Image 1 (cartoon, rainbow, N blue to C red):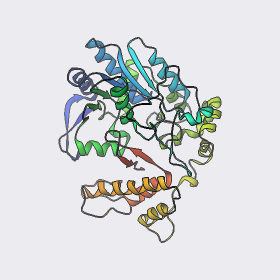
Image 2 (cartoon, rainbow, N blue to C red):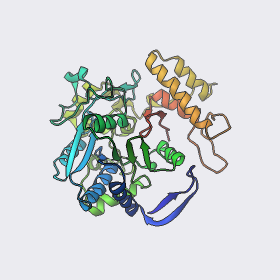
Image 3 (cartoon, rainbow, N blue to C red):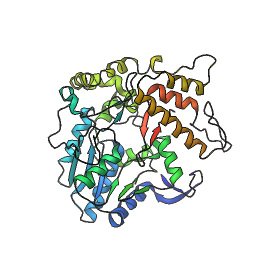
Image 4 (tube, rainbow, N blue to C red):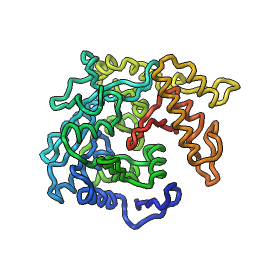
Length: 382
């Protein structure tokens, strides 16, 4: 499809160009090899989007004689076996130098009793869902401190600069704005697909691709990909909606009912590691996970009711900050109070910002960190 070029910081005004998205992404990656700080890393999750970035980057690395391509994967432990097998296979390619990080960073979790868990936490080694990969890397004695309350950006930065000793570096990631309203908003606000944070540069070369563009590129080039997508498709999941994600993440909840059938042996280990998964499998699509507004109460009132009912001080402090950030982002571009429910703007755009969205996210522990800034954010529920 034609590339849509941003010409306003709000992102609402766009104009089509004659360049298709494949050509545009290829040019961005080639420009990165020529102009952005070395070394170039590809952030690789094993999903479809990072697969495209990996393959385009391999082509550029071959063109500019920059092999082997440095690839970083942040292993989240409770990942489907097909995707872990695919990542391991990529690591065996002669043109790839895989850096396999298995570090207990803070990860969000959809649970009634906790909002986070920590993959590869040494304290739970006896119930790890998988054995540590042979070349798995844990980062202690770095700027991460205790190492478990940081996000992906902090982790990659600590590894590239503190462990490998690079004074600067560039990371290419498969982030697409179509996947998340928060990603779209971030692009609208910054108007950039390249983010510079001091010595760290992050490029999103396929930010303007649709899911159809992704699968079209994979199919016509015959690129390998995780067979999890094929399993999900066999049971009726569309390629549009299927996502590779750590189990327990909100993104994986629609697939959880299939995990036991797909991977029975791994499922037994997974529910020992994350016991709430057994409940998710039975009730993730039921009313138990649907927020119902109490009679006579607004969503704003319900949000603060949920906050006052929290007993864990850390979770309560997290959500207090979350509310402050969420409202602050709204007021930065609107003179009206945050609406109780999503509304149509004067331009006909249905905003997802509302107290309803915030209440839903809080009730479901639907938490994220901005991949560029590390700031706490709230994933909008569509």
